[in-house]
Image (tube, rainbow over all chains, first blue to last red; front, top):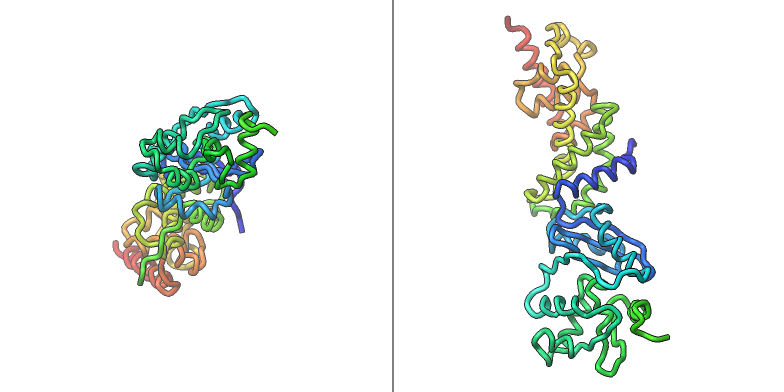
Length: 188
Length: 156
C-alpha cells in the first residue's frame, strides 16, 4: 500500500501544532537519565515522564487535557533545548511555563513551592509542607512528589528525608542520585 | 449500541494515515499530499465534537473524499458538460473532473457513489468504507444516481 512519507507526516504534525489544534503536543527525547516523554499544552509544559512509551501516556493525557494528543516534535523544542542545557550543566533554572491545571488545592500549592527550590540545594518533605502552609503534612507531600507530573523541571529530586536519606523517587533512586550529583548537591 | 470511546488523536491518525493517503492517491494521483494534510487538519478541528468512535474510518474517508472532489474540481474549474451520449455506456463515462459538476444536484450519497465509482473507478468495498455504508447500499446509491442522470439527460 502507498504509505505516508516521513516528510509528509512531519509536515502534518507541525501544521497541526501551528494551527493551535492540539490539546497536548508531545515527543520522546533522549537524556542522560534515559528517554523522557515530554508533553506541552497551550498553557505550557504539562508532563515529563520516565515512562517514555507513549501508549502508557496517551489515554491518561486525553482524559485529562482533551483527545487531541499528537506527537509533534517541534512544539517540544523549547523544553528539549532547556533540558539539554540542564544536563550539559549550562542551565540552573528552567524558563518554561508549566500547566498544573490537573493539580488541585494543597497539591498545587506544594508543586508551586517545589518549583522554587533552587538548583544544587535540597529541602525536606516537612520543610516543603511548611512552606505550602501545612507543616505537619510531610507524608502528603511525599505522595505529591511521587505523582509530580513534571519531574526534573519541578525538582522533586531535591526533596529528601529529615535525616538526609533520599527516601524515594518515582523515576527510581538511581535517577535521583544522578540528578543531585549533576547539580553538585550530592558528593560521591 | 454503546458508543465506542474516541481514541487519542495520535492513535486515530496512526491507524488511518496510510489507508487515507492511498485513497487520496487513487483519487488524485500526484498532489495528494496537500489533500492529505487538509483531511487530517479538518479531522482535528472536528475531533472534539465526535461522540462515537465506531465509524471513524468511514468518517475520515468521507472527509478525504470530499476534499478530493473539491480539489479535482479546482483543477478543472471550467469543465464543460459532456455529451448526453457519454452516459450511455460505462466505458464511455467521463473522468471525475467532468463528473463533479455534472452530478452537482444528485443527492449527496448518490453523487459521492457515482463519482467514486465512475469518476475514480473505486471498487464498491472502498466506496462503502468512504460512505460509511454497506457494499450493497453503495452499489445501490451508484446505480440510482446513474439512473437519475440518464433520466435527466433524456429531458430536452
